[in-house]
Image 1 (spheres, rainbow, N blue to C red):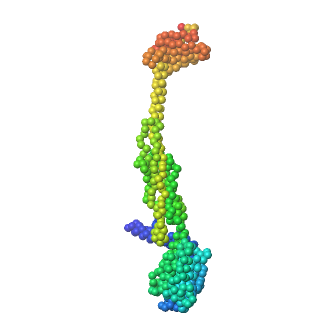
Image 2: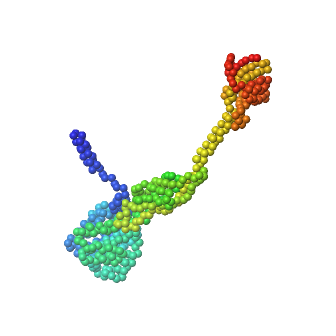
Image 3: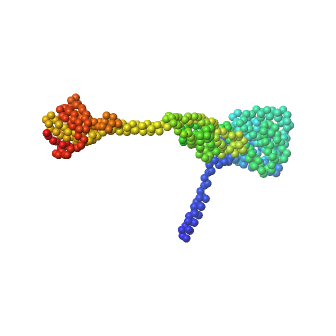
Length: 511
């Protein structure tokens, strides 16, 4: 009971501790736009914002002017500190009230707007002209956003260069806008009432968007679109052509010398991007030869931007059976193709929010490998040769033993003085020495058959009285015969006589 209670408490504590631990990041999980922008460090990319604010008297109605300033405060607070902001007010004329970094205090920028809207007219043409001059000035950032906030229609004062909503001056504005060279130029008109001159901005700026009329209390939400568009433009400028790059495959030198059985290779996958992390999933290597099977580990391969990952590849080649020829070699070529799906945790942001044509490729085209394997029976040939040598050696050894058998019996030695001694034959070679026979000099006694098939054995006796080779005499005799060498008679007796007075295996008897 106590043990069960302790186990229950321990399990509960473990669950609490685990629940408190931060969740591990999922490899290759999709990244949101904030993560992508942070990785690209888009805040370091400077953009120009030109904000045109209507300060005519009609902006007082319904508290629109105060609501506009509050919406601008939220908008400016979200900009990067180094972004350049130009605030232009317009009514009877257009006036630049701020031109500098967004900084970190949006209230200071909003405070530069007039305290109240008291203009008697609404010269939208003059405001758009000011925006073109600011966007096109020397040293301007390549990314620019123009934002028009107005609640009235175009109502210029007397003497304005834009007395109507069309004409020569408006055409000049269009030509100027089209001559601008920007990496990204977006314009947004925000009508603060249902019927305004905001659409005039779209007449000048190509592709300008007129946002849907909205209640003034939702101005902050409407201004999210220009901010998001500018941030996306920054990201696109940082990416450059990164979205069109992919993964380069590098095969090792070992692909040119694949042997029979199993060969392990290391294939390198290198990301050619500079910013975008990539993943390669469903990786497979194919061979054009059925007897060559290739495998790679399962699971996605993660590649940081510009990084390299080594993937182990196993090649199994069935080179076929052994050949009879000792040095037979099987050679050939095999074409290997590496395939896989290249993606990125950033894919949704790239194709959705940034509108990039993201289709990374895997440069794993066909690669030629060389197959070479020794399939000859050199081992068996060597074994057979060794066996033949062994048999020959055994035959030669047997032949020697057959031709030179171990003699049996004794040899009676009789010298010139008539002294006799018996030399007992032992082994295949018996020495004649002074110690064994009492005779001076040196000699040897062996046996020999005249041929392999002969049964008769001859005794071969070599003796030198003074022990020198030059004085040696050689003779042969059959059983019972006598041969005289160096003044000594040698008689071969196959039956061993009765032993009397043995000295060194020799029977001595004098006549």
